[in-house]
Length: 196
Image (cartoon, rainbow, N blue to C red; front, side, top):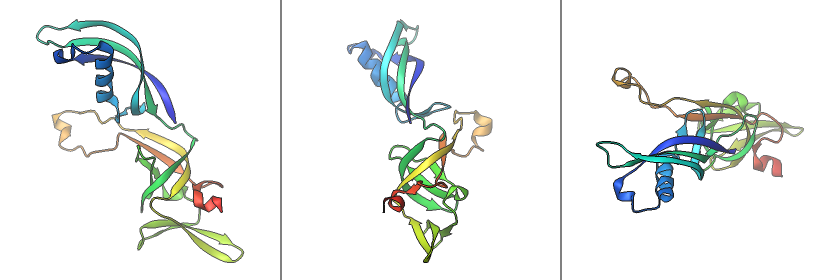
């Protein structure tokens, strides 16, 4: 779920930060730049773990700031395929059950990946599992805020870098990273289903 990723970046330190220790200024700049951002094909950056190497700092003509090449490791949220996670239901819609981890909201469990037979209740805006027993069918609702155990089946990253003036007018905002999950296996689904 959380991995350490080795990265390299050139960090710009403004002149008014020269009075601070170089490491402290670099840590602050790296966290400003990367924390809570999705990096393409890497994952959601959480926080700096450590700095492994600092190269020489340079001041370029016309810019009073120092530029330092930094090698560092960053804590990143990147769920593995087939990993089982526990989240909370954020909301339900026709496209499926939307799950949040508290710090990452872009997880979708599509209708075909729910416990079957499942149907969407338009009035209450929730999905329900029609669980069959010897006494008949029971409707098990997937309510907002309930804890849910799911398996990660796919992860999609979208490059959201600026493209240019010709395509900027037609672009629609997209999520930089989204995970897809399933609860279509025994033991997966709402924790309350399996605790009793």
